[in-house]
Amino acid sequence: MEPVSEFKSKSGLKRIFSAFLYSIDGFKSAWKHEHAFRQEVSLFAVGTIIALALRISAFEKLVLIGVLMLILIVELINSSIEAVVDRVSLERHPLSKNAKDFGSAAVLLTCLLAAGAWGVVLFNRFY
Image (cartoon, rainbow, N blue to C red; front, top):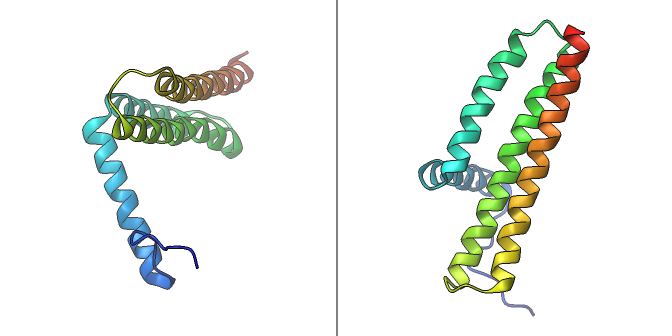
């Protein structure tokens, strides 16, 4: 039999409630320790207000808000990668650099996707 981690989740409603609390802890930690996350939350808030105010379809609003939320999701994953790399070792290593750079590249691609989606929707709306 395989060893079971003491951190393995429970089952049923207790697991769902615990997972929710862990997620809240994750948001709090990201807000406190990750400057990029705070910037992206600000972008998300402003962008959401703008998207909701635009005279566009509900689907287009969903796309505009969704791509901004995707930036937050990818940033959280990137921050997770960085935290694990730093936990393993703070010394410089090419593999550590690669892991962090790959996460950063994922955030950049997500930002480019968001910019493209906003560009297409706004272009179609105003031109």
